[in-house]
Image 1: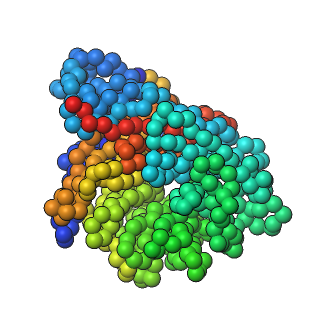
Image 2: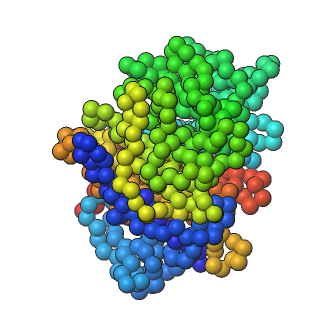
Length: 495
């Protein structure tokens, strides 16, 4: 049996015009000790136990069936005993199928870049087989009955690139519908790896006749590991060309229609998540001291041109950085960013969250100070406006928990945990942001007997039709083979 304590980021978010309060009442949990490869937590949940009424339990997730998520039934742990399941009425989340999809196999994969746009989902990731590196691109429809289509960069470009060094940043372009990629690659016959853009037709997954004005950004020296933060593409101003950000040599680089180059280098940067704003360039950065070679540092809010970084509430400087992710509302006078970040101290990971608001000059973090923490790493978050829902937005989260296995003295278990909430934003929420968690508020996306180092990174995307997709990498025990995996969940109204 696989026992470990789980804690989920499922939040009730309330805001006024002056502040955002992140209510931690639904975020109860304690950080355990021990763990492997950054994992933590002991005792508690038994995911392999019987889920029949009367079985022993510690939390509600003990009583949920493993594999199938059925949010139209309520599974509760009452006085350490699983109660009989009852019908649930309201917003539920159900799994699409009972197992994860093995999307692609290789010797290794980098960060799985995942986006949703309309009814389309696009997954792209760096992969390596032997000495050959490549990028796989997969297209999914919101309708799970439609099979995905797949292609790879070498085929699309006729082996234009000798090697690839990163997963791509991806964004959708319209008229015609295209996938824009931004990645580090070395064209055949060139001396150095640089940053390149290209467009792929969405329908055919082939090189588009419409290509970016800037294909070669003329910046070399990329050295960020493929599993770390990939390059990112962001919407440009006034529906113009997308802009991009990436890390190399411990510095933040940026390009737009006019300029390309370094924009932050006063600290060493090891991870980042872009932040939304009406003006300026902003990001949540994982930083360490200049000249450092480890991952012990801080997670801070950065604005281009600002002389100072903004510390996040509850961050612990000097702790190992274990991931940062962000999403934002698009409604209202200005975007509200939701930031999730993880750090590890003395082998025990902690996952926190906060709000952030940015103007042209700075970013300000806000949230309720709390002693609650979550023994989790590798956060991922995404949100999108609900189709036909005025002022409604679905927000999906995923993260990773690892803990010892009571049945294997030297073994551990690693779970990817998901959660989904429906936000009410803008005027429909009376000028505030409210949230209702879907049932169940926490669910197991994937469970394995692997250590943390063999699982991840993880990403998540959400469509306006209520489809949540999680993508992650899973490596075999000796790290000789890897699988790129996905799993889908659907929001539905349970009656």
